[in-house]
Image 1 (cartoon, rainbow, N blue to C red):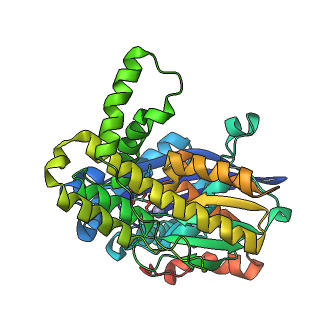
Image 2: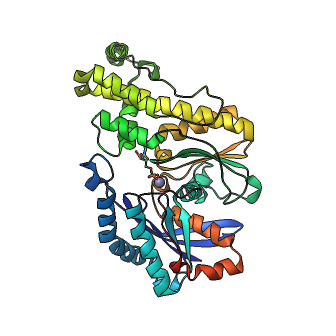
Image 3: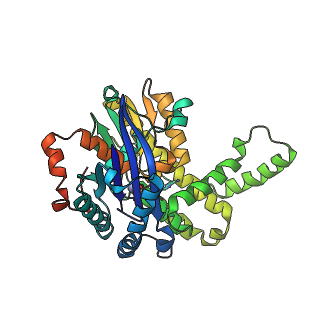
Length: 390
Ligand code: KG4
Ligand code: ZN
């Protein structure tokens, strides 16, 4: 089955063409994965401007579609299913993607299925990664129906949730953020530190530099290294920065990240001159990131002890964070006997349309004959929704 897919919920115009094969479970071959990012256009405003994003989606969407068909080397008439992100997201941006999908559905006379953006992020975990299968890495796996329940930690720019799945396409939110999403906290912290937008990748790079220079992390230091370490120890002492781990001891599975961002703000306001010092930026990035990771992992493990999942998964743009990927994997192995861990391939962690196609395929498989028939004139009914619930 060939799926043509559109995602325009925020600042990426994403088009994919995916071939799905029913092969024991499901197998997906990505024929085209076009992602045109608008980051540079929004960066000067310090965040995404909804109307600008719509204007850019409108300019770029047809060239992206053309590019995808050229890459996939197929023709529109070969497509079997159209999938599109219906929400949540920025309404001006969503309208461009949904309207384009509706036009193609009408013109090509193909069924159309609308997908929840977070459902897409969750299903990015099921895109098999051949290399990881050979080396038995926990990246992108096919799973069977017997491997439920699954507990999924969703971490993106708009969401931070713990989602329990008892079966495919079935979601129970057992905890979520009471204020900022964790990706939003990364972005706001980066803005406070003057690192630009989006903040996640920049913060994680500065944090990695600090980690690699923490004196204790270098076991056998030579003379030169020891001298450097003494210097760094001095610096580490100078920047003895400690941020809170918000709600880490609360009994529920909810999160809060706005206090963490405020703690960063106060520290920076007290030490404005140090903003020119890269070591200061590195140490704040490291401590902020570790604080967020500690809370995310602690709540996930606590929820796993209550709900006994067979698999723990990670989803959403912040799942591209290497430390979170590594530390969650290590903690699941150490603390939860017999529980598997899966995370999406980094190239499908942040917004893309392959994940929307994969989720759409599972939805299509789950539909009755009548529902499938109705999907052919879904171009009359499908509506974008900014606050769509999972
Ligand atoms: O899922 P996504 O691409 O868009 C939304 O659905 O929101 O997530 C974007 C978020 C941004 O807040 C961005 O800063 C964050 O994911 N992000 C990261 C990293 N890469 C992207 N956060 C931490 N570390 C990263 N490496
Ligand atoms: Zn996303």
